[in-house]
Amino acid sequence: MQVEKISIIGLGLIGGSLAKALKEKLGIESITAVDINEKSLSQALKEGFIKEGFTELNESVYNSDIIFICTPVKDAVEYITRLHGKVKAGCILTDTASTKGEIIDYVNSLDNPPCFIGGHPMAGTEKAGFSSSFSHLFENAYYIMSPSKNCPEESLEYLAEIIRGIGAIPIKLDSKEHDIITATISHVPHVIASALVNLVKFSDSPDGKMQTLAAGGFKDITRIASSNPKMWENIILSNKEIVKSTLNKFTETINTFIEYIDNENSNGIYNFFDSAKKFRDSIPNNRKGLIEPQNELIVDVVDKPGIIGEIATILGNNGINIKNINVSNSREFEQGCLRITLPDSGSVAEAYELLAKKGYKVFKI
Image (cartoon, rainbow, N blue to C red; front, top):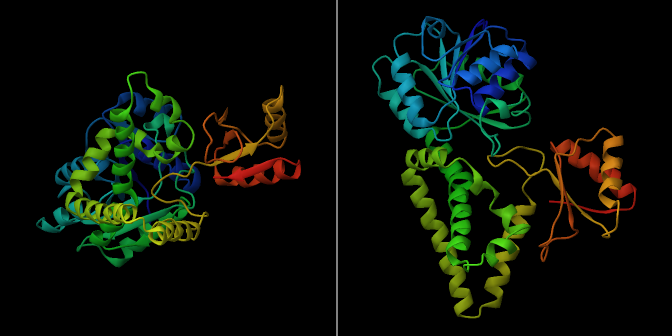
């Protein structure tokens, strides 16, 4: 199969990054986009990442070799319904939604179902929209593929080649297995992060002391609570039974810990933290997961005039772009006080080596 034309439905962060990656990394010229946001379409056309842009499906989309549906699950199901029976023979339909079971079950229930491969790139940021998209979003990220029943092996392998071409790592997973995994490592953590933030909100005093002191570590561990609420409403409802089951397991874990406290079980409390530390430390750092890494360094510095400029100059002279730099005022459980946010893991490694050689105490998060 030789791809000549690709269409992307939904030109937000994922769809926009996909268009940029297909153009820049694979040299695909004929890319059509569909989005209700005309501003995004105009920007993509102006910057040369798409050849055509429409607000509705049409013959140009139906005539594609591959159609990426980069929308929430509910919208993706609607688009599949509208595309069913209209796309050309051999066309591969795929999506990028965070749950797979509901959409695969729907496709398999259709009469003469299309060649559909459920897709889930394990990459993203808290930002949204085409303006936030970038071509290297998928680099070194796992990209899940869950084929429907009417998907030939050659179509699966062809999509895998496209995925490799944009820098991602394709992995084939059954849709139900995918949803169990993502519920545990992504969906429930987002629920817990939001629950922690709401706990502070509803426990705070009228003068907001908790909010003031919640800087530093608390803000880091709840960072994902800043994600798009509408998107997460859609994700949770599309995977509701597995999310409920996983939350029940989490509740059991918390209840066990409460028992350790009630019984003053020192060994139980110690082993709870020790087991978590050992397992977390064994998780590799060189792959992207469902939650975007922070790409931050913490530098232990003396509070003196010019220290921030000194460090910024060292990094700038070596071509390292600083996205953000600030002083951490709440660092009871942190080392250092200067937090530096960098664009990617490569910049973190390079900055760490540079500052360490200059004698600074540097810590990776």
